Length: 375
Ligand SMILES: NC(=O)c1ccc[n+]([C@@H]2O[C@H](COP(=O)([O-])OP(=O)(O)OC[C@H]3O[C@@H](n4cnc5c(N)ncnc54)[C@H](OP(=O)(O)O)[C@@H]3O)[C@@H](O)[C@H]2O)c1
Image (tube, rainbow, N blue to C red):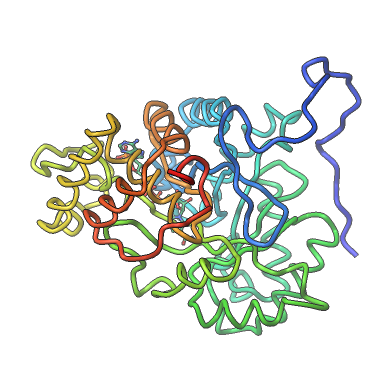
């Protein structure tokens, strides 16, 4: 049996700021929260993706590091953006995204419990043998120990299996996660880049009995409103499945790396420092069809006096089955704009117009939102 270490979460000091709290809360610092799938865990409607947080000077391929990354996390906490997405593997398998979060946790140990941290296990990491890969018992458990060290925390709130592993049985992964949950090193499980068929199988296996602690609360697959779900990462139909049955859908790359913003309306103006330019993806993503859709979205955004990004994020939060949105950011202004999307009220007519402009055909939630119901 594994034993949890306790580095944090000691409530010995009486804190007058916490006197006279209301009986319950549905938000934190005005940021609405939403429940993750069937679980009781709640996460901020706008989260933050930290794939590009790391140590740029080391050549790990990250974009934001050092003091800038810490300031962004401080700002996120101030805004109630407390659902933080990472993976050991991010930035060339350096582990540096997790280390950045770990530095913040170390400075803010007293509020560790205010943050919902999600990390992932699967691709080759921390070593070169075949046993440093996949969802075998060995790799799942060793990966979590390594992540906890980098994150400088006692537990992760959500552990995703980053991909379906053909080289080991899913039951073996579930056994390992179940042990981690029982030892309180992991609180909830999620999966990423799984197909609708794989998720359905997992939901069946974990419905009752020995694997019920591993019932996935979240599925993290690619989705953005211009392209929908792309075939290569779990494929289509997963969002629809999540609308019908929990888990919650958490979209990765919800802004298509920044395409869904005002900044690429004229791609000729994009330059070094813009992520799509830096990553060599400008031509592939700035197609005439995408630019046409973005211009129409820009008109709709103007009508409500926000940018395209806020409009898109607010729209995503109204999609049936959609959980929190974890856009990445490289500045505090972007973070503030994205956080504000959680409070943007869009009428049914506005939601329909956005869906049409983006070419999105899925259902919009009737009662999934924070401010659009009854409008
Ligand atoms: N599970 C998986 O396999 C998987 C795969 C990929 C990503 N993910 C997760 O998903 C997260 C988000 O995806 P992503 O990193 O690809 O990025 P994204 O959220 O699609 O795009 C983020 C980029 O958009 C730009 N941006 C953000 N807010 C903006 C605003 N308000 N106005 C204008 N531009 C704005 C920034 O570009 P600039 O940097 O150019 O300013 C930022 O880097 C990742 O960080 C990671 O946590 C998971």
